[in-house]
Image 1: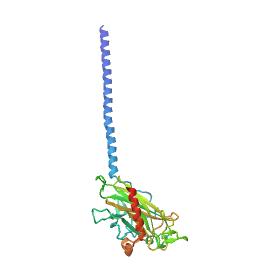
Image 2 (image 1 turned 135 degrees about the horizontal axis):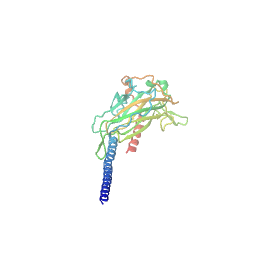
Image 3 (image 1 turned 45 degrees about the horizontal axis):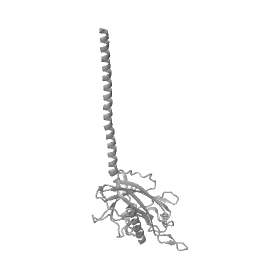
Image 4 (image 1 turned 45 degrees about the vertical axis):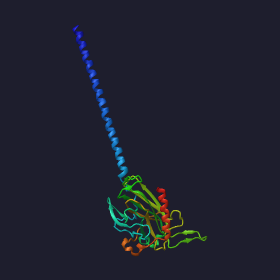
Length: 304
């Protein structure tokens, strides 16, 4: 009997140990499950928060592609004839400077306005092509490429009154005075105009800055016969940005000209903007303003 009682007691103790062990494992497993859920949720919340923040303030990459060996990079502090077009119409004054933006020099356009309640007027920047490429080479231009970076300085006021530090609309045109006079074929069809342009439209409602590469092919869009005239000393490249209500600086870099065979063209001569003298007051043909205004209205309508 004593032996039976002893065996029964040992058996009971063993069972209690097993139950205790099972209970411990269950508790540990439950505890691990409970702690793992908050950790995962916290990580997801952190990622969501990071994504929300980046949609408002994080910049887009500034690297828009490879840089050609003949690109105008402004690294030598030469503005390459860049100057403001002053036709006294709808343009705004701009401050031009060459600045170092995170180790990369760019031509900076800082728009100005006298009336704080008004929109910023049209930015109009002009380059003198014969001085940059040589008059004999201007007629060989087949494509122009330019890199834009826009950085918001002030907040954009939305229709509901809320504010966002974003670039907003970046709408404009790459164009120019491309011939000294109009040309017609034997049937009096216009084959050569004195002004042509290609519009660009970039919009960023999520970032405080953005970068884009704009390329325009000569002949220009909708004007298949247009091209820079080799004998036109007034041939120019004009870059415009339409009116905008918030404060955004424009940076230009890697301005590159290609000939009709696709080869980049070297800049053989470049004067600083202040040395262009009377050329700074040069006005594009009247039809340029009409065409630009029409294009601006259609771009604004598309943006709305």
